[in-house]
Image (cartoon, rainbow, N blue to C red):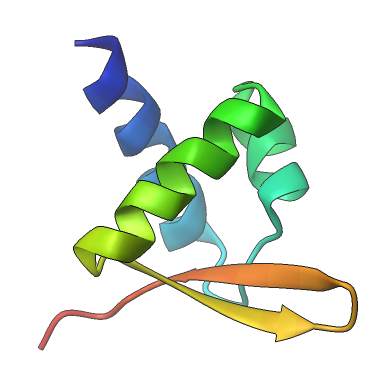
Length: 67
């Protein structure tokens, strides 16, 4: 149950910021630990829900648009 709650918070945060967010920004906006956010983003990337793009030293995360 907690897993779905974290995932929902991350998805909601990414929907509100289509310009992309770093893992740290997602953690700050959702109140979830940075390491936990990283774990979920990794899984969501593998599932095809999230796309990451390297910008300088950080990675921006975007919610993939479903067609």
